[in-house]
Image 1 (cartoon, helix red, strand yellow):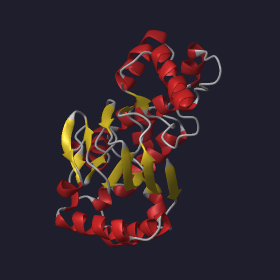
Image 2 (cartoon, helix red, strand yellow):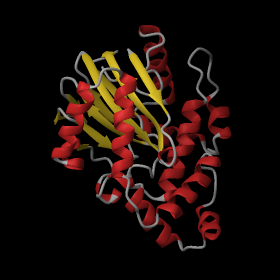
Image 3 (cartoon, one colour):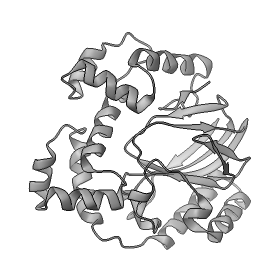
Amino acid sequence: MQYVSRVPRPPLDGLIDDLYHLEGVAPYPRLKLPPMPSAVLILNLGDPFVVGGRSGYADGCLLTTGTRHVEFAYPRFTRSVGVHFKPWGWAPFVGIPGSELCDLPLTVDQVWGRSGDELRARLDAAATPEAMLDLLEVELRRRLADVPGLGLVRHASGRIAAASGALSIGDLCADAGVSATHLAHRFKQIVGITPKRLARTYRFEKVVLGVDATAAVDWSDLAARAGYFDQSHFVKEFQAFTGCTPTAYLALRRRFRADHPGNALDVGPLPAD
């Protein structure tokens, strides 16, 4: 698969991890995506795909930071342009409260209406992947809007990320100078989940990034270094995020690498068939 990406220029870089173009044969008909501390907007330029068992995503979709894994069913050949947002980064471009979007993928039409179709047409006509990303960056800058509370959520989320989720929410509120209720409300509006849930997601991400699928994995050590002090709680949380045990997860990671070495999608998604 061809994967071209880049970090956008300021101020978008404070909201977005990267803009990307993806094109090629999907590694598997179905992939399972564990929740990560990020959001993604996919502008589909190929055949429709299915998200969470639901069809109708011909134009693409928006997925905010969720609480459980979601399944994608890809066409054999996929082509798309997209945005990997920071957990709070999608809010200035979408006029919908995050609390209404958690674990609920939206089509691009639901997000941007007819203007989303017009953008997809212009992306499809662009000569190169780089030209597509230029066009997308200009469009995002045009759509950028102010969001009340964004600075607070961005600061608090940055502290959560720096600690890989291993921090007290009480300390976080004290540092921000707000009540736990106020902070949770702002997070639900802008991220879609509470700060405690986001912290759990960052902690889970630390475990996943610490897995070396080419070697034996000491799950107890990995869990302890990520801040899990109870092994049974770690296994339960891991299953809630991925839908499988740590051992089964490792087997799927190894299968992906063996079946499709160097594939651009081998960074988190798992085979679901």
